[in-house]
Image (tube, rainbow, N blue to C red; front, side, top):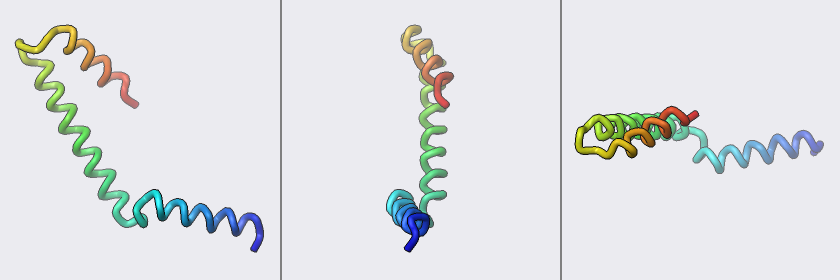
Length: 68
């Protein structure tokens, strides 16, 4: 087996381990994206209440803007 073939085989095995076999990865990504969206909406709602600390609101908005 050539070095390239060995590297390709290693990559296939690594990808299968890290993505849970590949078939559930897109579903898991969508679930995580939906969870992030819910958390952001909850943070926005909390930041918009009058009882929430102004400094915490500013920190929330900065953290949200800094995400990739």
